[in-house]
Length: 309
Image 1 (cartoon, helix red, strand yellow):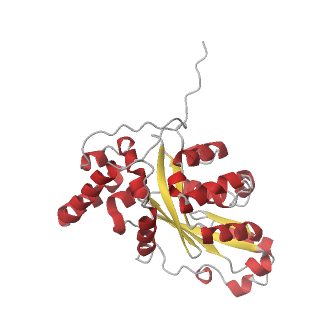
Image 2: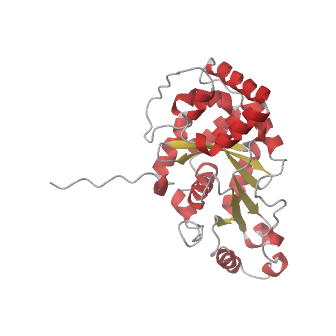
Image 3: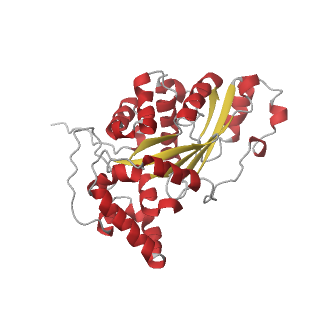
């Protein structure tokens, strides 16, 4: 399915906007922070410097995590030094080296912990009266869902049952994927991990610097209560505003459809590779598909129009 079709499912303002293992494989990106240049190109990754915190400071997103890193260094110096040593060892490994299995276990354990600013057991009943809604048509439920979030700064969607069924089948086999968020300097990577019907996003640098204490920064909640009778699944989100705004959250949410609900097998194959053949996974192809879909265009820096002589 083309991205444009999915975009029609999101709310009224700006695609659903209301008003308002891995660590090892990608450690070679340190000289570029965790960024790649905006245009796909052959990747050249010269390593520089020792594997100290100077490498982290070169990351354009270091300031967002600086307080946590300093806290770790001050109160748990042994853990900090251990992680820096791990970075030093990772640096010696080939780019294709993967510790994804260990990383996925780390994420599964992390999702059991309490998350900053997120609602525990966020049920559909806590948002609307499910029994009353069952008496309404699917179109009415979709309109009510849209109106409910019209004054909220969040992301939401009404997903056709057939699309969600395809996604759900693939999620069972491939629960984790790497997403790219356009930034002024390039791209920031986020890891998306499914836990039941919740999709948790965490930035790669957050995981790299915080390890098993890295917190979720965005959660997409999917509600299949109306799937059988109304053929729709409702979705909404919560985000940590210290790290993501609504437009950025929208971009990540739209990429879920791009990679999991596509009818182009070669695109979904990237998800399969990431989960089952990590050594063959090429993260540059994620950026390539993102640019072709034109998702996140509003996050990219605007170029000045050419001057007229």
